[in-house]
Amino acid sequence: MKNYLSRSAGPGRYGQMIFILSILILFPAFPSCARDEEPFVKQTFVMGTRGTITIYGLAAEDADAAASEAIREMHRIESVMSNWKENSEISRLNRDSGGQPVRVSSELFLLLEQAYRFSELTGGAFDVTAGPVVKLWGFQGGEAELPADAEIAGTLEKVGWRKMILDAEDTTVALTDGSEIDLAGIGKGYAVDRCVGILKKHGATSALVDLGGNMFAMGKPPGREAWSIGIRDPQDPSGVIGKLLINDEAVATSGNYENFVVIDGKKYGHIVDPRIGRTVDHILGVTVVAPSATASDALSTGLFVLGPEESLPICESESGVRAVFALPGDVLEFVGNFGGKIELFD
Image (tube, rainbow, N blue to C red):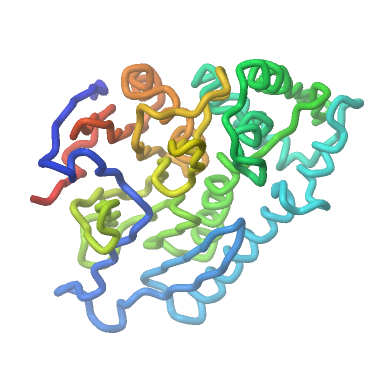
């Protein structure tokens, strides 16, 4: 079915700031579920956030083995792809910025190829080399101050996915001097997809992997038609005002509601347009549904930067991708076909 863009105005403050977050509504007291169908849940802290594995339908011992291996995989990926770990593979690659091409693992190379593709797809709205300009605005440990135009222009010389030169034959990566790679916008999604593969290997057919709001829902919980992902009222974190229903798909959200800096009394959200080096202020939040968590993670950032109109061609060209945007002025815009699997409460 062809994708479409539709707009709706919400009632009062709900419409102004509704967006889908990583609040999982498991509805544990399903009328049709027996007690032995309660989920097995295992958690960890990794990549600066909480990772949660929820499994239905496996014996406790089997579920524990599956979840434990999945959690070990999250930590392994962090050791490879974290910029905060000096000995990670990505940190070693960044230290050779401007030098000779560096041979990397096939795993890292394949992920960088995917990052390159999403950068091309979004025209650079998603870009794993955006770190220098993000730091310029005071994020990722930088000093919070309003950058001058000349500072932005100078920093942008280090930014651009084409400064990441990939050689598939030798699996090498070369970075233009001063450029660096930050996989924060795609790495969690990739880790989720890896965990899903592990759970399937262990025979799980009903499970949810949640890594800092990057989620993949396998199958469906017992007695339900889909997994329900809650829509939280950002002005009342205890309030749930809607839900999104998904099966065998991924969900990720980008928003400026939590991570921001205040400069001269004005709030600036942490999402920066890598093409122009300025923060994105005309979008409140976007949630992307996609066939893989890698895709939903990368596209939640890219589509946030692009906005609804420019995101429409991407949702039309990428099978299974759709997005809901929260805009100022009590407006929600839906890009793509949700097929009735989204519901807003009164």
